[in-house]
Length: 341
Image (tube, rainbow, N blue to C red; front, side, top):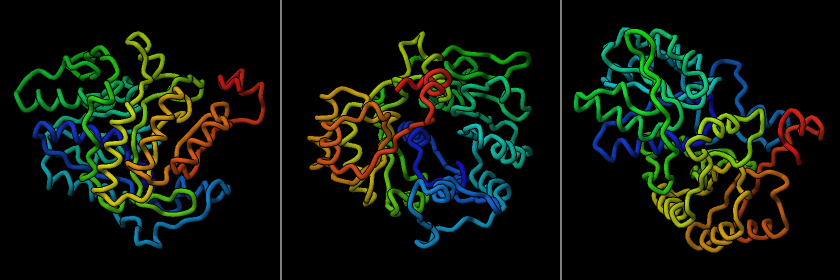
């Protein structure tokens, strides 16, 4: 993770839950609380440019770890003795992931190293060119990771698992992409792999015990600068990438997590929260206040905001929305960003 960016990632949480549901042991080495000297975190940058009110995690006792991160990672690997080491990365965390990988390069070369995440999805050849990387997951990782763990446990062949590019003696085996998963069929997120400090997140000028919940995955829009443009094109032959979680399933998980972790706030992962059917928003507004009742935050496109939708959000406790304008120049937005709004 990027330093001090304290929001629970739903993707890793679901992968962990799926693996544990079949009896596999999972441990997380979390890079969040390692902050390089002089590094300006995302929240600090937003405070500096007056996008958000000032907050300080250290005021509630959350401090950067002393490190060094590579030595802590070496110790974690030596203590846990994993058969599989996975890295979930975006482009800005790729360099750090390689530093960590090299720090354990002498550890049991029989332990496979698999990389996933959006950077792995769109640069698989670059990653497989690295000597120490064995497997790259292209696209969603829940079921590829489950099938990989099954193969390792049972002594099976893991080289033909869909979504995985597997390094062989010669060229890598580039397996086909499977259709996007049904979000309702996935287990609830596993948050037990995180330190409790990871639940504290600055939102709206306060620091809350915050839960992250997937309301949908992907985006119905394809802005040219956004990863969703690539995901939509990648999954187009398989029926598309964007899909929604049913509101009752979402509400049930939020209710359960609120009770279990004493949540004070919810962050709804939806690339465009208000771009959906009216019926879906009405159902959310009817169920959410009584079942969950937490203040929450989401993201929306400006043209999706209407008076009716604002009234629904206000009625069910919405704390705020992030709106992406991207550029003040209408022609630039239209021509170069595919933001015709």
